[in-house]
Length: 257
Image (cartoon, rainbow, N blue to C red):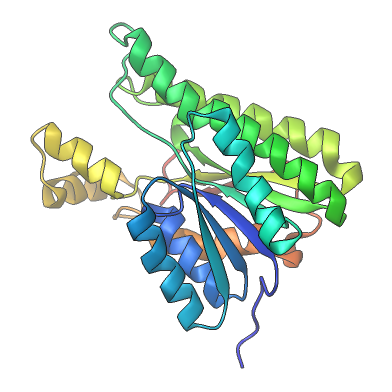
């Protein structure tokens, strides 16, 4: 039987019903984890949980509005109530609206910061609360190449991902003595549901997007959801027990600096 690298670990995922979050939720189930999905799309979550159960693991859905600090805290409270511990947290939830510095309005800025940073901050707070009861754990914050200045039309998004990198370094430095680790996963250009929808709203089809990105990226194609899975499993597994404070890049060679 194939080794299950996350066997019996309780892994909480914010934004686990779409994109890379969904792909990892299903992979974590195959790796033996008990998966706790936080998000708003209950219908999608229940399909994922059925997939997880079909491979012999467990999972629950906790309806979570990430703009609510109480909901962020409740996500971890429920994970602990049901499974008695929290071993890992994969912070995937995020939004990427058009937000140039010279035209970004307050509503857009607040929405980006509320979902991309504030929610992650309070989720990490609650994750640490429960991880220290179990002797430690691993947090993976989803970053972006935009954190290194970013494209002109993603100013608010770039700032939100930059401050997440600071949060990662803060947690890694200050909680290592409690064996609580934190690393920053730099995602590349990926045709997630949100990215494809945004480009379509700008008049670009998915096929055109893939062709344009492929011509720009050094490795010749966009990153797909499954390209990240092995890296996330590694960072949340015991194999990376001495890894903290690291920026882990999977970007098809893209670096914005």
